Image (cartoon, rainbow, N blue to C red; front, side):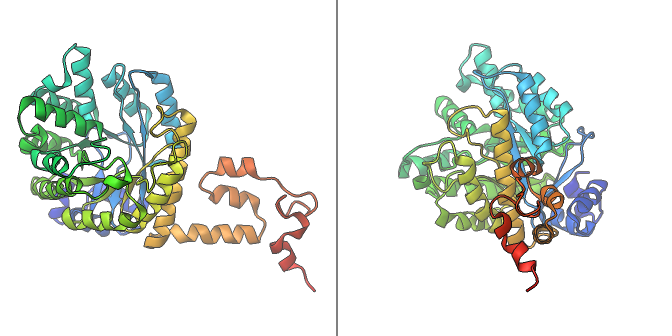
Length: 425
């Protein structure tokens, strides 16, 4: 049985027990959330070397880090170093988005080297295979797409992004209304061009039952992708995006009926005033499924600092009910991220997630800030370092004041307000 089927039989699985311990909640809370579809328990049945992860309502906001090669930058050693950074910086999941090199070999090594949940976008590999065989991407068959998905399940991938909502109807909405920046999702564009060339409906939508039959034995979670997400803020919440979301809501119900867990991916670029509405729209149209958002980015003009832009949007989105943040690095829109970029992106998203968890009243979130206040009051520098989101950076920045007998830092020294406040009159 899948996790969803187990929950429906009013049984608590070993994975649910583990997740409950990680979250500090009762196992029944996890079971009921899985049954209702607002929590997913993520772990491929073949990926037994890692702990399962629960994502959804009432739980800690999770953070994903994207890594992977491109045709221009295909160095497995670098990607494995990124895996180590992801683990050390406390990302919750890793998505391997490789498009260059021996993609399956890279994926297998990443899975073997990581203690984290792994996600992928199978159509990237399907497209790369076509180009490697000197054929156009649009010439791939439905079998080519589904065979790769099966392969990812066999390799132990825990969740996959599939752009099932890119349909003739949703694409038609964009064509009728118009967009400033068109379609910016790689997977969405592959499928759009395939549909135009072949004059057929998207196989991932038209043969959705086949997709469910493939993923169910592995208990892979479907991350229904936002192939028509806006790539700039003026395109946000348009008819194409909303129509895709309506389709994903319908597909969510079909997956649950089949015993397959589902989460929904959200838009990348959204003006700040529309972020909460986008979260509420997803929860309403997609039957409360966990919401996985890229950023979102509430402005388009901060290349080099998009990790900060995304952290602002992510804190707002998660406070409004989003459950899972896909990090954005400083390299977004500019290059493949370096090892340092990966860490910067993870830390920025973890800050956003923590801010949101305080707002949502998630178990244990505010307590960390209360501890920091206590440690600052006590001039407990070790405690401040250990409780911080990035202890390494905190310790590197710390500079104690000689004039304040090492109690204060060099910002205020002997004029430290906390120290002066403790001085008896």
